[in-house]
Length: 308
Image (cartoon, rainbow, N blue to C red; front, side):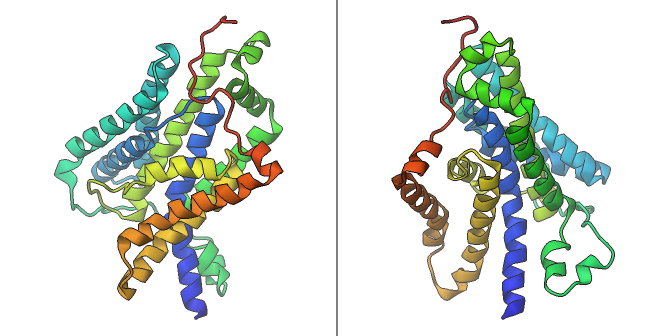
């Protein structure tokens, strides 16, 4: 029984890693006031780019960097349309999703079903992986898992304890006030959306170069949309992103474990969204929850420099 629990928890961490990376990225973007609904397309483009580069070079680290880069490029395009052209962010984000899915399907077609010779290696800390229970649970993962945790802690620290974090949050809450303090609002917004896109691209790279080790169309399986819900679930806080990502990762694992029992996969796939709605409903009933559950004040709104 204990072995089953450890196995489930280990697979939960693995399944939650791409959700964590992409959610952290979306938190950065939305904290800067930019709603990016293109996460699904960015993750897919990151997955196919990372796979092709890794398959060609044999180096999964180059694949990861390529996935991050394509994520930043696509999100930078979304930023240009949303920030510089001040177009509707919802429409732009949906367009990025369609663009990313289309490009990944086009360029990934020759690689469908091909196994990846070199996956991202596991971090082997001598002796720690042999510790009973905790060794297999915490010290037997690939580099993406540990990088996601480090990135989450760094983002939490930046947002909570640094001037950079205050600047980012002020731009998302009140860009006019931020501009009056000499802050380059549009520059901060571009940074937020591109950094967030880079993390989404990294999440996609994880799916193809570590999680599955192959490329297939639909590899993201709707995770990009789950990330949008997770960002709200996390209340735009990195700490909440950890909780939500691993919770949803656990539900992904349970889907495969419960299917042999005859439970409908469609019913199981509803569980993450039902859980999100339930938690937000309960949290929203409390007065403290109502105060904290508000999104960044100018999320999704175009900003015109110098306008009063």
